[in-house]
Length: 439
Image 1: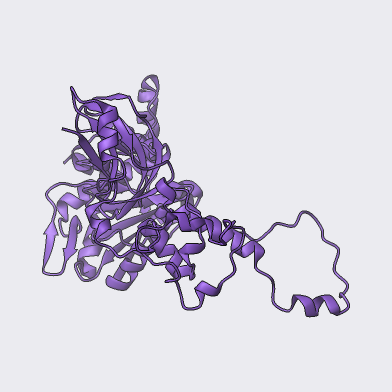
Image 2: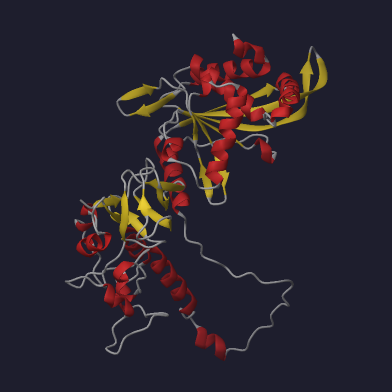
């Protein structure tokens, strides 16, 4: 029996995915666990793995296509089946059940007046029909992906004017974005003729190269970040608690341990000690290791720390599980592995799920103090600044000390000010007296 592979939910908030790269081709033998393709979700590029064995008979989508959840992307022939016969039988059946229930956008159903917009940069056939017309389904509807329809509706674009590059002329996101670029380049400026008739004013001499203004469409990651940050600000009343922590003993201990670990080529960071201290403090204050729900507080049994990682296109938060049970070396190795996987787009879904508290560290950029926005539904996130030499008062005398400023952002629906302050006091004690973490 043929095996139909559909787009799976690879992240908690994923609604569709972009097929970035095929790792197989028609005729390839596939084993369970093989990576079939790389999928751009709303968070990162994730591998799509095979859960069955077979021979690739049909690829339904092309690289760059946006694919709805549940839509078929690939068909494999089972053992003993002829891949060519399987492909012939199932060719053209890639539409998902969910997508087939949705009404496709008819030609001219964009924003009011969009149908009269000129066709910039697209060819017509001998009958004057737009090239995108061949992407129409029976009944005059336009074959297009959900994301393409969404962008077209928001920009007032008639999909009948867009030429599709997807399977069977299907219009995908990149087609709409290219159309927008052509339209922006070709659109005449208002008052152009009047300006030409008037004498040209003296123009200042340009100094250096002139950079053109660009319109850069949002990536999936940026859209997700925007939506989640807006949700956090709208839904959760925040409380911020800031504390200065003396890091002299941590700095000295770090140097001592790194000297011992040099042969293993392991170099602990100050952030590793912070992660360990946060995990231990969460054990003592379970109200911060929690998620907020409308009818209950979920106090998590495991301490799974989300580590914010900055990428070129935004921010991602992979998760370090059971952080309270890990030693400093394990925390360092786990954090490095997550950061490397995030930057090389090799994170798997398990590494993105299950976080109970998040740490956002900008200390390596020299940032002294900042406020982080909640990673909902978690009720707490810690913003970590740089460790630097500052003047401090010690036993009535002014001395130089190593100081770090940290700020807890907490969901005030779940966390009271006193609770947040107690957590910060415990965290401060662990970092200023690291031996206390052994008790």
